[in-house]
Length: 617
Image (cartoon, rainbow, N blue to C red):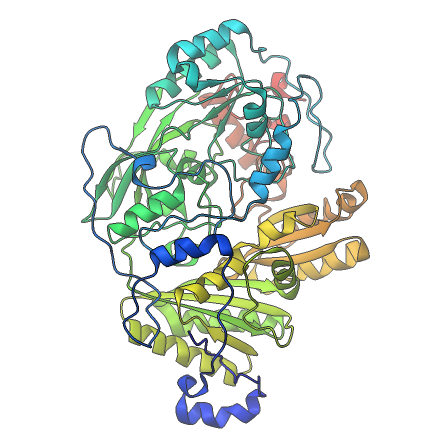
């Protein structure tokens, strides 16, 4: 398929092109261009998914539904029956197909996990080994927690069965380490409950014995929130993956917390809806973990946060109490809206077991453009122009600097640079979704023409088929994966006023000099910067240049030190950079009320000093 450029194929200067643009519009400048190569592993899946050609014109980016599915009102349907459930973390490509599960061949997380599984679990319950960290001292194990014994294991087997209690060192070792290999715990036990009742019994027992617990979903987090710090019992909800019901009039999905996000996306798309949340790790992350971390993702600019889309939750508290808030009502103004306590609490207040979530209607028209800008000011102005000109159809506005593109081209297989002729300082990916294909495309093209004439866009292309659109998204979503292939990566997820957002990237480059490479990318439409500092290996000297500067700078500009990744272990002691002492103390009071023995995800989210003395370091 031809891939059009906003400029000519030879990249003629814009001043020469302005007259043809006025006369003929964007379509007058379409030029043939070879599509990006497809990774060999993906060709079979692509052929299986590709609709038959109906002519020479490119197919629309969004395909017709392939039918509907009826859900029983009984026990529900397991997603292992409906679609491919992948509990091994892999990096995912963006998919626009309806019933075609992704078969990712990209996989640093799985590779890391495999390598880590070769090492024996550290059985020491003393000082945590710091494989990567913050400038803070290693956290001492709280001696008030009990040590797991054979009676505990026997009890868990009595309620979960032998298959639900994992002691194999290699399998437990994989669950002990985060996908980036930064944080490693020393748990000796992995539990796999399959029902809310089983989760309730596990927590009630752990609370009575004061056994610390770490809830775990797809283990795709970036701040050490989903792995043990010491010897906590790991409770993974991957076995709770049933869809309970779907209201295809109102678009309300009710499901268990272990459902993989991509499988939910596939299911609701077949019903004519989409998930309000889309992440690069959607092939592995679980909806319960998404809610517990209040994950943001790529659709935030259009559909907002999970606080606005989650209608109800079922949560198991630390003492085993099941809190049923699983309403599907859009409006319920009876008292405190308690579900919001658990959205973003990172498993520190309770374990989410079921969720009802509002899914928007799937719109038939999708367009994706990949653009370049000469400076960051142009990116800002382009965002403002997009909000004004594209309005209701704007669904994503992502930006990357040149270093990100170079990294992706070097370390990602099967991707192609859409703008290879000249390196630009910044790149922007814009996606629109709407209900009228011809209107939406014309609106996008007119916006891009004006933006080029105004000097905001230096160059750009619009995807003409699914392969090209997927290639654009693969570049953006693959940056995190590519970064870990360099060696060591220090990742920071910041909310900063848009006009100042890139300043910290430039300042960080001045601080680290030639010792590391600094990348900036993220959700510009949400003011969310992903700041990555790459080096061949972790170094205390590099870390000293980064922290606490990155937190102080962010606080000084009234930003947030965590935009969407949470606090976890990495930032628990840094919360004061974004929250007042009074707010932190109130959070600690809620934690003590709901989890008095502090068994749920200890050492995370809140600083130890804010909790009772017996929980301090």
